[in-house]
Image (cartoon, rainbow, N blue to C red; front, side, top):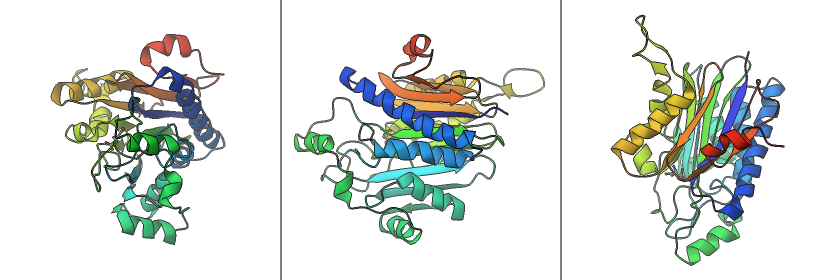
Length: 310
Ligand code: ASP
């Protein structure tokens, strides 16, 4: 059975001097998730392990390094979903939890809720999740960006991961600090099943980009649905390659709404796809067919960097 994992570090513009930090971070995340899968761990464990690495890295807009809202506070959202049970869990508008993805995972295991603000933090504390002071999650760079009241040059963006384990179960997870200068209490797509993530028996997807554009096209569910190509073959549906399905989903978004977005997509055969309409999107992946993980900051680099990272 194929096992596979793919992570993203957000649809955004990556300044040249930030490229290395983005690839290093994504590579570390994919390795963490891959180790879990290799040891026979399940897809949810792998997604959680990978996203925790990205949440620890101030290069990315999730937990440490989260962007600040208009009042100078952070507000974190995260969610996880798995394919076999269709169970999911999410948190939004939290700033006292160290790893929002782990809280979402715990909710998934209990009951499919999207818990927000105080009640999410209470759940986290009661379930032994690591708590922290909000200030500990604010990076120097994000504080400076906010003080200068400017949009970051390379907009920090959401992180996500999709994995398939040895049993063929798929999981998707996404974690974000939202968008820079957002109004307090704003919740984007990240914690919304169907928009920020989705997983079913056909595949799993994690998205990134402008939540206000991702939500109306239900981007993650749209991408997963496109894996099933109803138009081909006289006998009904056949499966479309995730590479094509991901691109079609981004094209649909692009045709219907303004804004930037990206998605990573894995099908039930462990095949990988990703697409975006931003300038860059850091992505790393590993499958049973590869010798070592591949990592990119741009798609056209695939032929060059696709020879895999050291
Ligand atoms: N999708 C996230 C949000 O709208 C932001 C991002 O992916 O950069 O909250």
